[in-house]
Amino acid sequence: MRTPLVAANWKMHKTVGEAAAYAHAFRALVAEVRDVEIVLAPPFTALHALAGALAGSGIGVAGQDLHAERQGAFTGEISAGMLRDAGAGYVIIGHSERRHLFGETDAEVGAKVRAATGARLVPIMCVGETLAERESNRTFEVLDRQLQAGLAGLAAAAGSLVVAYEPVWAIGTGRNATPEQAQEVHAHIRARLAGVLDESIARTRRILYGGSVKPGNVAALAAQPDVDGALVGGAGLDPGSFAEIVAGTRGLL
Ligand code: PEP
View 1 (cartoon, rainbow, N blue to C red):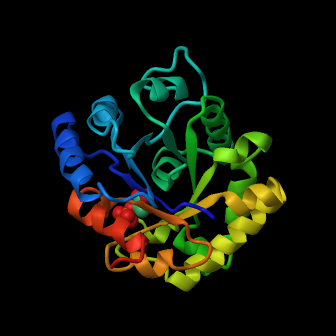
View 2: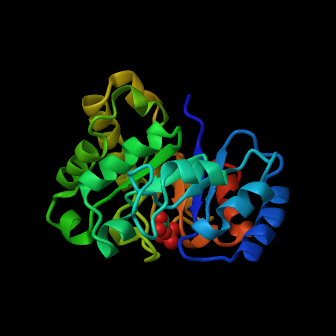
């Protein structure tokens, strides 16, 4: 069985002090949770402090991006090894804000996924279509292209891969995909994973849904057979609401 995974992407929010306060409150709220993997993705500046504040809790820490090279003259960038060194075990790759605001290409996403697995970081690779692409019936074509490039050359290293389906039209808009829409796409992604990688790998990979996940809608989404958790933006900024999302993922709301 696949252990559900719930990750909060804090984006460009929270200072070191705010991250530590969140960790303190959140640890207490999820202290009994053993059946859901929980990950927090702070800004780089708070990563090391947050990992320290969460030590022994079982809650993981993720980078929000990385550079594909190991080191070098890449001003402003962070490598996979540096993320590990700072306490991360995961990294979000190819978030739609990186793709659309910063021009990240499918090929760059693929290089970053390979760099992450090479450094034994769990890549949380984001894919998703825009509203225009959905309305012109190109959702599956777009996802297939993103998956093909994002997983190129991965092969056996795909054992740790997590995919997050994040329809761009649902991110930060308050408009989430229905559970049925999410299930349809997740089943398609799993079938593509079997084609690009391997049947047995595809069966065991977690596919998260992201896009306006809230305490009130997470249970119905997580109840879908191919939805293995959530990648959460806005509702992950508050420890109470994120703890409720964890509870909803367990069917307890
Ligand atoms: C995200 O940015 O990954 C996201 C899912 O945001 P939100 O939950 O705010 O829609």
